[in-house]
Structures are given as structure tokens and as C-alpha cells.
Length: 324
Ligand SMILES: Cc1cc2nc3c(=O)[nH]c(=O)nc-3n(C[C@H](O)[C@H](O)[C@H](O)COP(=O)(O)OP(=O)(O)OC[C@H]3O[C@@H](n4cnc5c(N)ncnc54)[C@H](O)[C@@H]3O)c2cc1C
Image 1 (cartoon, rainbow, N blue to C red):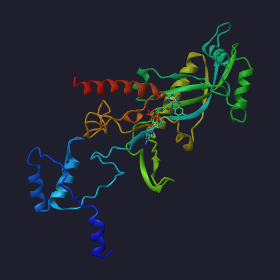
Image 2 (cartoon, rainbow, N blue to C red; image 1 turned 90 degrees about the horizontal axis):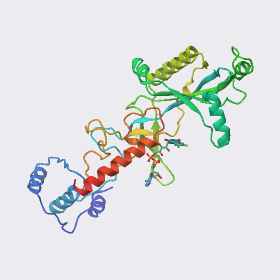
Image 3 (cartoon, rainbow, N blue to C red; image 1 turned 45 degrees about the vertical axis):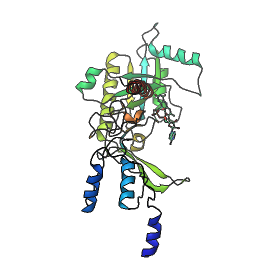
């Protein structure tokens, strides 16, 4: 583009009417002095304090065009927006056979009865799960973890034959039941697991989202260790046996819809996007709510924690508005 053509484009960004601006200190003189020696200035202050109006005013005063850009990138100095994306690790890990002492109703029988009462087959399968107590988890330095027993897998499962055999033959004189086993486990928060915008556009012209999950080796190691402890404990208690199988890589990328992280909370702006009340650092009136604030993901479904945080946040905003 030649120079007159550029001038014509820029002309439309010139501010022709003086914007109302009342200075609060010597910021106008400081800006003037910095501009005179072409020194860049950074303006800092909470949302609503007047930064934009000040820039508009200075652009008018100095006769400069003002071009405002819509920014899609992380604007925080800590580069944390979109990072620490977390999902639960969830995959099938094998089979479990459970025995019951003769004449007693054990948890698995109760479960089956409850399930048939609910009659939700085809809509929703209930399952029961086991977690590790806090002490062994801490001793073995494991992430959050649960093993869940589901109704037996449909035929076609490679291990089904062997397990069916066990089910139909009495095991030390006790009835036996068989279940598929699934694990739901925590992933360690990882800054390289992130959500960001690609250069590709969707039908409406917005940049598409990329979700880049980077499984840490410790995620899998922790889940496997937990499973081994569970299998050993099951055998030791005499309540049954678990047959475990290795998960393949694709299973480790399965998404449960439990999206967490990307705007983690921390009181220190260098470590979090928002503070403990969900208020974005550096802004006085911008709040985030939801599982994006989570710093760790645990292994439990996230909604109750999301609601608890939202209620706490609502109370906080009420107090801020009341000035108490
Ligand atoms: C299939 C499935 C099953 C699940 N099952 C369970 C379960 O059993 N238990 C459990 O605890 N969790 C479950 N979850 C997870 C749970 O649904 C989510 O963790 C939870 O809903 C997240 O809440 P949120 O408020 O953070 O986000 P959301 O519930 O996703 O709310 C975000 C809202 O923002 C709106 N929105 C987005 N963009 C814009 C915009 N530009 N302008 C205006 N509005 C916008 C969306 O329409 C949406 O209503 C499940 C998830 C899925 C996908």
C-alpha cells in the first residue's frame, strides 16, 4: 500500500472530539514526557479505573490514531490461562469375582437387588466402587483413585470365558459373582496439558479450540499401584479375586466430560489466574466460576465441588457489594 493510501486508512482511527477525562494525578504530564522521548508506557490498574478512557484522551491530545485490538491470547504475565487442563483417568482394567459367605447377603447382592428395583437398564447402569483409605494413599504417595465394579462385560470380552467358568463353579462352597472393573483416577496437574486456540476457524469465523492432554507417567503408575493394592486386599480379605489387565495408550486419553483446570485459583497471581473467590487477578469485578478454577482434580465427579465453590463465591460477591 502506498503512503497516501495508508494515511487514508489511519485517518479513520483519529479521535476528533475531546473525550471527557479528569486527571487524578500527574499521569497526563508523565504520558506527555514519555511520549516526547518515545518511551513506552505500561498502564496498570483494575478494570473500570479508567485506563481505556485515559488512552483515548491522550490519543486525542497528541493527535494520534487509536487502534483497539480484540485479543485472543493469554494477557496475563504468568501465562497460566489454558494451562493445567485436567480430566479423570478412566478405563476398564479387568474383572473381579466376589464370593459371599453362605446364607448372608453381601454388598454385591444388595447392589444387584437395588439395581433391578430401579429398573434403569439401558438408561443408566449403577456401579459400586472402592477407594483407598487416606493412610495407604499417603504411605504409597498415590493420587486420588477408585475402582468401580460394573455388571459383567458383554460376551466377546477375551476374559469372559474364564470368568464365566469361575462364576458357575462353586468357589470354596460359596456363591460367586463376576463384575467388570473400571478405574477412575486423578491425574497430576501438568502445565503442559493445555487448551489453546488454533489458527483454524469454525463456520462462524472463530478460532477453533485445541485440547492438548499430556498424560504424566505418574498418572498411570499411581493408578496401577492403587489397583494392585486393591487386588491384594481383595484376595487377602477372602472376599474375592481381581484379574487385572494393562491399559493401552488410547484408553488413557478417554475423556469423561469432567473438564477441570485452565484458570486455576491461587492467592499469588504468579501461581493462579483467579484468587480463592474466583476473582481474576488484576481485575476488581471479573469473576470466574466452575471447574476451571480447580487446582487438583481428585477422582470424584466434579459437580458438587463446583456448586460448593459457586455458593461460596456468591456469598463473597454479596459481601463485596454490601461493602462488609
Ligand atoms: C456426558 C457427561 C456426563 C457427566 N456426568 C457427571 C456426573 O454424573 N457427575 C458430575 O459431577 N459431573 C458430571 N459431568 C461433568 C459436569 O457436567 C461438568 O463438570 C459441569 O457441568 C461443569 O460445570 P461448569 O459450570 O463449570 O460448566 P458448564 O456446565 O459447561 O456451564 C457452562 C455454561 O456456559 C455456557 N456458555 C459457554 N459459552 C458461552 C458464551 N460464550 N456465552 C454465554 N454462555 C456460554 C454454556 O452454554 C453452559 O451453560 C458430566 C459431563 C458430561 C459431558
